[in-house]
Image (cartoon, rainbow, N blue to C red):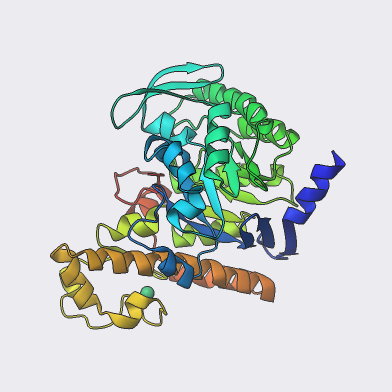
Length: 398
Ligand SMILES: [Zn+2]
C-alpha cells in the first residue's frame, strides 16, 4: 500500500531521537493542526475539560484534547452534535481532538448484557436503556463527531483479569481492530490501533504484531492505568514500545503523574491523556514539580505564597495558597477552577520542558533532576514496596 505509506510518512515526522534514552521529538499533522510531541492531552470527557474553558486551555498551550465516544453518544447524542456542526463546533474548540472508542467505558461503567462477535450489548449507566456498541458503531460515532484521531474499539480488561481473560480480550481486540480498519472515516481522520495484553509479555507481543500488521496511523498502549502498581505499568510499556513502528506516534492511554510522564517519555512514548490534573483539583490537590500537595491542609492557612513558586499560570500569578485554601474549604467554584488551571498548566509545561530538553540534547539530565526532586504519592511509593493501599489518585478514565 504505497499511498497510505506515503500519507503516514507525512502525517508523523520524527524530528529527533534522544541518544541517552528512548525519548523522541516529533510533529503529528492532523486535520485541525500540527501537534508537537511528546504531548499531554487534557481530558474533555463530556465535550468539556472539567472547569476550564477553551480560552484558558488555549492560553496554557493545550494542543489537543480528548473527547469520549461513550459519554457523547449517550448524552447529548449524535443528532444534537451533528446539528451543532460536529464536535469541534459544538464545543467551540478549533484545535485537534482525539476521541476514545468507548470500549473502556462499556467494559467499566455500563452493565454488560452480552459480549457478542461484533460488539457489546449493554445497558446505559444512566437510564438502563439497552444499547449496542462494537467496532462498526464506534467508528461511525467517531466519524460523526469528526475527531482528528479516532481510536479502535478494543476490549480493555481490568488489572484483576486472569491470564485466560486477558487472552480472550487480546483476541477480541485484534478481531475488532480489523473491523475498525475498514470502516469509513471523517475527512482527514487518523485511526490509531490499540495493543492490549495486560502484564503478559507474550500476549503483548502477539497483539502488537497483529495490530501493527493492520497498518494504523499510530499505536496506543492500552490496558495500563487499570489499577496495576507502577512497576507493572512501566514493564507493560517496556514490553510494548519496541514492538511498535519507530516512525509512527505511540500513545500510552490514561497516564499518568508528572513523574510518570517523564519516565514514559524516556521509554519512547509520544502521547498521553489523564484525568488527574482536573480530577484531583476537585478534592483540593495541587500538583507541583516536587509532588502533589493537599491545599486544604491547615499548614496553608496563612501561607501567602503561590501554589508553586515560579509558576507562570494564572492561578499562581494572581492568588495565594491561603486564599485558595479558603475557597476550597467553603466550596467556592473559583477554588477548584484555579487548581484545575494550575494543575493542567503544570502538566503541559512539563511536556514543553521535555520537548525543549530533547531538542537541546539535555533530556537525560532533566529526567534525573526531575525524578530526584519529585516525591511520588503514597500509593506509588507503597506499590514500589509491594503493598497495594486504596488511594484517591487513580488515573482511570472518567
Ligand atoms: Zn501555577
